[in-house]
Image (cartoon, rainbow over all chains, first blue to last red; front, side, top):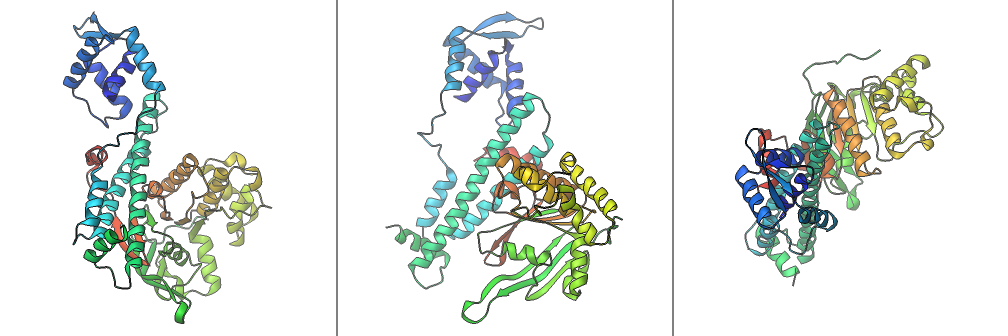
Length: 195
Length: 249
């Protein structure tokens, strides 16, 4: 998983101890995916078990320092040169909710779409505010900005998909006939339009 | 001369019960069905909606380029409907800046001349208008391109000139209609940062866009559907919640 490879990539820059690794990871990703130090040490011991890192003694303050091994470097190189797999999409609660909403009678699908769009846009506004503050020239700032952009583009994609759902639902409802779609009938009409 | 803010607290733009009907009889189109909106100094409001939702009509009415069928548009407390054509044109030049998707620059004029034009039309001497233009061009970061012609500039640079023209002379209402439509994502973002900075410096802005990524630069986002505002998104109260918003689902 990405924590394992992320820590390995950090160790490629030089030996580090657990707290240091956590701090470096969070500097680059802006604490978007907070790590607890326990996770870091668990990961380090698995990496050691697999021969990808090895203990490098203690620093003057008594921290247990780890260094990367040659197989570890190879693992990092492979990670950077291999695309992240999209073959198993992460379970998407929103897509599942929408799929249920259009098929379960009595659900106001438009309201579901609209409520979600507002919430996603609010998150998008928050990311954008953070972006407008983080403008330092340091590589770590750039890393954090790119992570923010990733969140921004994902949220934007969700809003576009919701717009698409809304338009598709409206078309399905109008194809169904002349009656004004009430929430319940618009749900069933889409269901039937899909057959 | 830079016009002093007429009123410190009142909205720079106010739309009251705005409706706009195009055509009549069989082919009647209700572009706007009753829109209320207030935009104060320092605020950027985004208007989103599918094609035909009325968002461009809203903007042209707000800018005095179109007249509402019923309802009122007030810019810095002045109702546009109460003005003569000449007064309206003067108010547009003094108070309202417009940014379009396709820049609308005059190809035969340099960047500085394009930006200075509204000031000169307003009776300012050409030397003073050029000075104002250079200030505006510096604010958008391209004063070194002042004597270039639009055709010798990239799309992003042309849009910066258009923004400079929209803000020259300290106009307090900036209306932008899909200003990033013709630009790549990185350049588009720079344009949004400029609009945002201008509003942070005290202007009121309305941005029409279909891109959520750009609307997110606004303080509020208004969704239009069939000529009605169906929803409005303000900023969240707690900035700390944002990381949960991104990763929590």
